[in-house]
Amino acid sequence: MPLVGVQCCTRPLRGQPTHAVVEKYLRAVREAADAVPVLIPALDDVPPQDWVVRLDGLLLPGSRSDVGPEHYGGLPPEPERERDTARDNSALPLIRAALDADLPVLAICRGIQEVNVALGGTLHPAVHAVSGRLDHRAEPDLPLDERYAYDAHDVRLVPDGLFRALAGADIVAVNSLHYQGIDRLAPGLAVEATAPDGQIEAVRAPAARFFVGVQWHPEHRAGDNAFSRALFRAFGDACRARARARAARRAGA
Image (cartoon, rainbow, N blue to C red; front, top):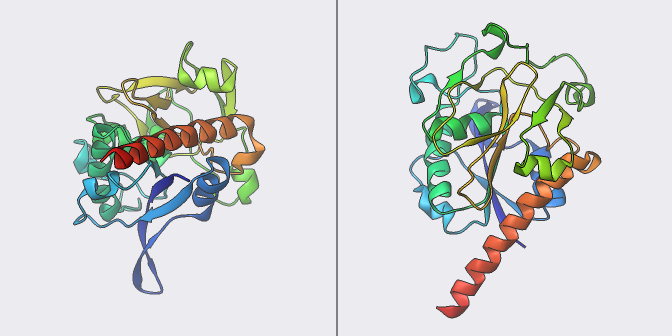
């Protein structure tokens, strides 16, 4: 069974610095992608290549924290916004190493923003403040199942794209909840989906085996949503292909 690294966030727990991942991402990897999740601590003194050579896939989960503007030439963040410098310093080099090694990657919410920044793109620090954009922020007081219901808005999928093939439709409803969002697209990435306001909602690196990012949350009850199941299944298939290739190389060594 393939091993999928899942990038941790850092946050205090009872006064102690802690590395953590919300369980729904681990469940989605295990149950929807049929792979084994392995936590990647946000330690910037571990060379990213040490992870890449041992893994069959990488999942970059969402988070309450923002990608630091110093990584893309943005303005200083609002004081109330949450930061995770340790995750920035761990994830951004790991993304570049994963792309270089053709490691399958699925990036979700903060993850798609990290991918765009790691590869040279920029972000809107507050999408709702951009003229003509919708307010994509979550309603924090709603129960989880209402907050993450797959009806925040539709996205239009690019004709002949990977996501169009997975969905079997031109338009799908998604549970897109975010504060930041892609501004200038990074070189080497292609748009796969856009919101009604034009905001980029999904990307892919066409030259890679499987290197995609989504701004919505397919990990939430992934088994109950056909498009989410298809996305995680495709990710798992790419990870299994990577695992077989690694096993073949070891056998021939």
